[in-house]
Length: 295
Image (cartoon, rainbow, N blue to C red; front, side, top):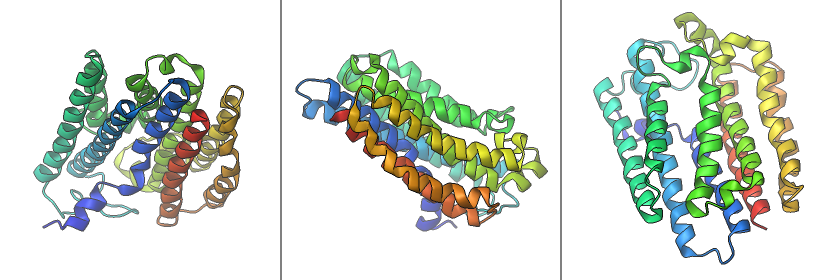
């Protein structure tokens, strides 16, 4: 029977910065745009953060369930999964995924009710569908090499610009928030890429054709480096209008530390530290860029 620690590990805490970072950037952009930014805006930011976290946890449990029942996780180089490792029944993991989606839905409805933009519920439903069909359904798009594209769109552009829009529609029409959203999306994609580089040998065996598998080990590693370097350049672009966005540039040393073992051929469990470091990088990047856009 799964323990609380097992369920916590199943939520994959290393990936949760991908949910918080876009909220930081979108909120920073709103603060820098809206005269008299007040508590009402902050409440919307908190609701969006809760929604994004619940959705990320739901994605992780859904991925655990779908990969587990397919047998993809029978042989792993990373931490054991709830379903594939036999710690919890598939039904329990599936229920946990939908419970998390339910929490995300409740927070989303509350947020939409506050701002009166009910059409946003359609985007929320699309995000939940994307979360489930990443590894679920008959033809999961995560098995076709489209995972990074989805992460860029949903945990980059949609989450960041969506955060800004729910606080200030005017902010969502400014170009720095879109550039910042692209930066966040690229780091989030790097998080998935390094995870998939670690799993190339086992994913190839079971026919899970992630982008890392399709690119091959060497090109996937260079793709990871490009994904963590490009956001720094996008910080420079944001600085053309919001000079304090230059706060992200000192993260170059951190990017270099992460890139070194990846290019040196680190594999298996050695990449887990890079995965965790990339998650922290995204959180700090989101914080610094958010501050830069706010000032």
